[in-house]
Length: 190
Image (cartoon, rainbow, N blue to C red; front, top):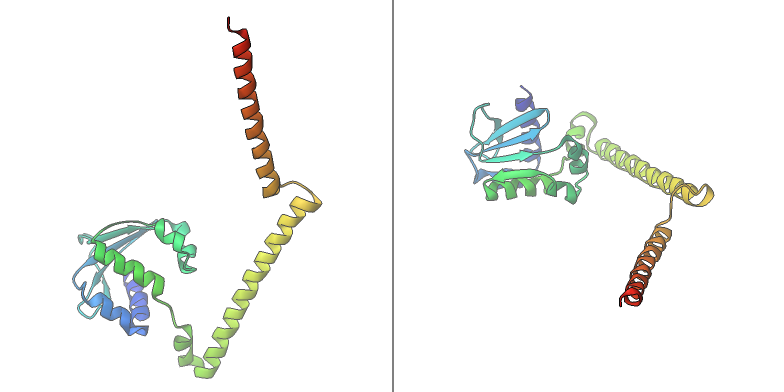
C-alpha cells in the first residue's frame, strides 16, 4: 500500500514535467528497488514512463540503499548526499534515476492553484519561499553569533587560526627534538 502511494506521488511529479516521462519510456519493463530503512520500495517502469508498484518478489534491475539521514539532504539537493547512496545494477537506469532526482522539481503553485487560483497560489508559494529563506538566514546568523560568543567572549572553542598555529608549533618542536636526538647520538657514539 505504501509503495502504491509512493508510486502515485512520483507519477504526479513526473507528469508535472512531461520531459521526465519521456526520459523513462526507454526503460519500460525495468524495475528499481529503493531501500530506505525500515521501508523498501520497488517500482516498475511502464510503457508511458510512469511507475507502478512492483511485486515484492520482483527482480530489480537497479537497487539503491539510502540511509534515512540522507533524505533531508537529498530534498535540499545536496550533491554530496548523492555520492553517499549505495547503488548497483543497470548503469544507464541508475544514471537516469540520479538525473531525475537532481532535476525533478515539484510545482507547488500548480497544485495549489486548483484550490486558490493562479495568482493566490503564486503568492503563497513566494511567501513560503521567503519564510524558508528567513529561517535559513536566522539559523546561519544564530550559528555565527554562537560561534563568535564561544570563541571571543567565553573562549571555549579554539579558532581555526589558533589550532593551525598550534599544529605548526608542534610540528616544529617534533623536528627540533629529532635533530637534537641525532646530535646526541653522534656525540655518544665512539
